Image 1 (tube, rainbow, N blue to C red):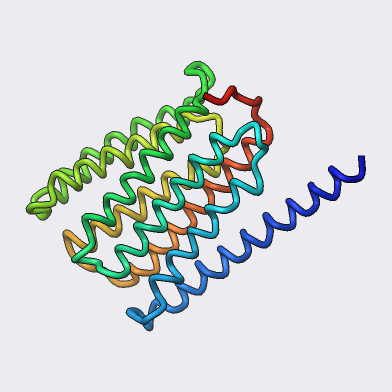
Image 2: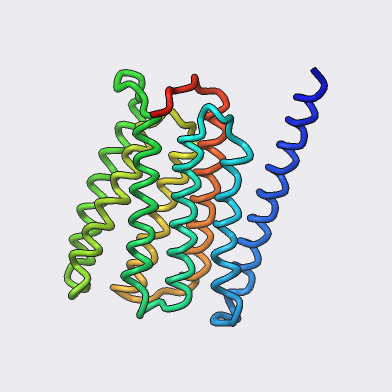
Length: 235
């Protein structure tokens, strides 16, 4: 019996190393924003999230490898979007948007796979779902006049992130995933407001801080919840 204990301890150590490494990279990117743009910023930004993509394979039980794959895929797609938007904020905006759209679709599949039964969804989560749906409509109407030829890509993206948040709120995952999904919306809203309406002071810090926190809470919340959830059959 000692072998499993050693294995579990090593797994926990690897978890911590990866989490600390990601936090250090994310904090480093935040601290270096005054020097932006600089040569290594796409690497630092991409690795902050790509490092988190390794966590599901170390933390999750083999019986839940399907969820691990989805969680990792969403983080990899996000890291690709980060790099694209950092390398070419204007030139590569649509490809970057597409990468994040893919991340939201993958997250949505993950949350649907782990959905709660309707009667077990609390009143607070149901109210948040209604609030998110209303906010998505109002925010889209607000920025629509400034979107120009990007109206369709942005509309598709809004639908994708809204679906991600709604399914996160309806999932069996704990509060960290819900808060992370809402922070993702806050980050993207600030980014869109600064890009399509008017730039505002501190936007770089606020967008990155809320975005990174969102991703960190989603991955740690999903992994933490999965250890307590009954196993589901893999397709």
